[in-house]
Image (cartoon, rainbow over all chains, first blue to last red; front, top):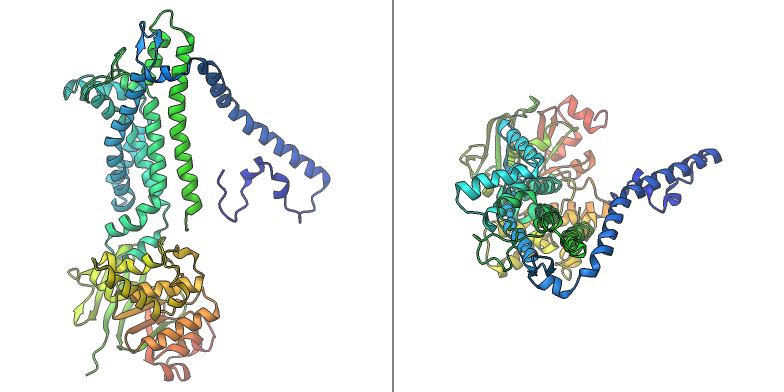
Length: 310
Length: 253
């Protein structure tokens, strides 16, 4: 948990050092202290309860999935109607989709975030854009899937392909990237902008040389979190790019591809006599992929915070 | 012939919230001298500084009227190259605001955004500016350190150095020593006394004694109006206006 320097943060009581935080100058009665201690324990318990489901889930998947986890599982194509062999095409497919999504959503999202934070005047148009972005973030993922089917697969005739799926996922990821970019830029103090301009820099030079570098860790974190969500989605790629079974790697952006989330859906519901270990193993791989991105994002954020000069 | 550094005529500035910050200022700033703008808070001194190098544009003022002549041209004219103007009229703010860059980059920033590519020339300018602001001896061996590691007094001299690196004609300082200790304050004041040979200096002092100490010329502002303007020495001994006298003698403000 991040505590602003020099501030007494109420949430800190959840941590282990609650006893040290208690102000020594306050001569509270024994009873009051006991109530306070009891209160700390309640809060501590609640904090623990919120973490338990995640720990339980991850632990269960690791326990169930590890047996099928092997080098062959990661590097071979499925065989025997997906009932044995590996899941390489699904892993590669998910990596391709993540990269494809990044190619479209990162430049657009960051540019839009910079525009809204730095250039847009506070008027009706800006407010409309903001509302649109918020609404976009609230659209259910299956709707993106159908939209992608209509626009990219059918209208633009990209077919069921990596391209169409990446574009669909990009639209879904955009609001996350736009709003984190905007937020990160806003958190850079205004005084740097004034100083930059006072030294004869243009608005763009100030943004490019001072503001963006300061906001970059936050922006990168937002990008990774957005891509992580895209990597784990099933519905948007179901109609736009994911293949039921393709025992080889995709050859171009116009080929369909297997992908981990959709593969999990397929082997859990569509294949009779599917070995349970393979299901859990596949889930474990997706979990590692997604949580791995999360860890990287957290690392970047914490590292930047430590180095920050303001 | 003594040409004025700035000629301010009938200047009015009004912000978006309807607040009139300057109400018809007429003032001629003498070159190669320290002109002090002083008076109680809210008098319009900072607005005047921000208007002189057009930083006021960032606040999107509702009304900018009158004129400020700099080399015979009105700098409030929309055709004026604001970027160039800000390089010629530098400003140091009341709190030291080092950019989140290295010490070196803080000073070279202005040159680099101005398009200076010659690394050797940038190096020279950086060293010269740091020497002028008396910071060189303290930082020459750690120019690549983040500027935030410097002490408050050093940071403020760094802010001065990055203005000097652009070789401006006018340096404006808005209460530059208000956050500094007496030693750092003395260093900045010492610099200003030496620097007026080369530059025109406009100083908003952070108290009356600094005003009296530094002023070659002094202007007293009250609620957006210029109450009195004159030669520094006479000004603090025998103010003409009752309100100036009251303020100088500490009866209000």
